[in-house]
Image (cartoon, rainbow, N blue to C red; front, side):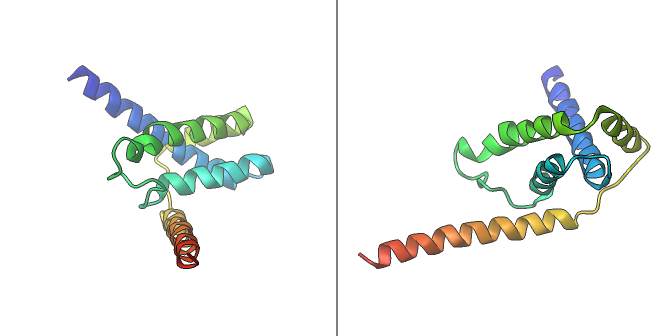
Length: 127
């Protein structure tokens, strides 16, 4: 049971970091490169659709277990410490996020997979 509690605590910490990143995205002191990566990270975290669907054995959970935490960690490294501290404090005060960004990411992921399928159809239709 202790292992489950550790995982639950890590998931909550990751959620809080994503919320802090969403605040850093709006902050003028955050550099442009960081904003681009943060935008991708937060969009992907909030998207109701995964780039790699969870029903694919093993690979389906790679994005949840490796890719997303890695994106969050890299994004955090690009944010000035004062901005990050301020954003984390605002999250502790009860900041809630607008989920519109997640739906935009979902549409982009659907378009990505539609393009992949379309290209595959075109490639195999020529044969």
